[in-house]
Length: 225
DNA sequence: GCGACAG
DNA sequence: ATCTTGTCGC
Image (cartoon, rainbow, N blue to C red):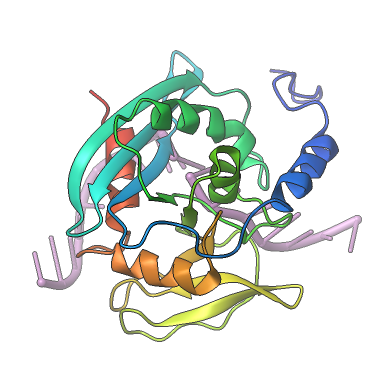
């Protein structure tokens, strides 16, 4: 492709999408509003394999028993990637595939853990928050790296966490899910509080760095069939 | 203008 | 995210 010309596959107007993000973000509920006790946990993630020079998005949705983190169901959905990754606009690229996968599940999770940011986003609407707001379901964003925000390095022990700040607002946590590993960037999505996002993410962590819902979805997205 | 930047 | 060999640790 001619590098001097704009990519026709790119969104027409990013400022319009940004405005939509602000609008949806204003509807995001930052309080715990989900069943207690929690029965089922959902996990979502996407892989982006290239076939014949074209990029596809393989979304994976999994369901686990909250009680013991036992796998209950898992499905996938593959769609053509609409446009390249653009920092701050990831949800417009991956949400369609994630919604398709989530819709194929027979079980309905009480709380979703999504690989990506929650409200710890420039316009407070990361992938997890967008997903939750779109379906009005409880969600938490569990990212493997930082999108934005400042923080102090958390302690070395499992469970050690530091607030993630932006413009004088605590939007999430930098969590050491396992002793000595690279920390996770956790933030509330929809219908989950700041403390709730931290507690439930840590509770969903088994023996690995990533919480089980996200870890299983990640593995499935990279190994469909 | 320059650097940063989920997946 | 993907590309990609060997390598360190439980």
